[in-house]
Amino acid sequence: ADTCSMACLSSSECKGSCPVCFAAKCQQCQSDSHCQTAFGSAKPYCKRITATNRECRADTCSMACLSSSECKGSCPVCFAAKCQECQSDYHCPSSKPYCKRITAITRECRADT
Image (cartoon, rainbow, N blue to C red; front, side, top):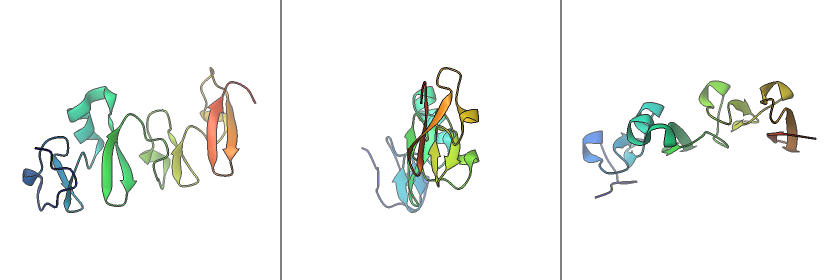
């Protein structure tokens, strides 16, 4: 039985794909280690969806952040309070060397400008 979003007091009450009690409800994770154990490299990052909701994801793109230390995978930069691919060309790989401004607060690495 899956316990996702069920109210809890401890992780012993949580089962299935949401084995962690965090913010008084059963969730997939509280930290990356929970995701790495459950999903391996397929979904290794515990992504903050809201202040009280966490899910395991393949990357941290669009996750709310306060610093780049929270951002991992293909979106390692915290810019405009969310994890993104880049803030400047410096962050982009040689295959997509240009950090393009998509909107005022969104940036992506692109092959050309």
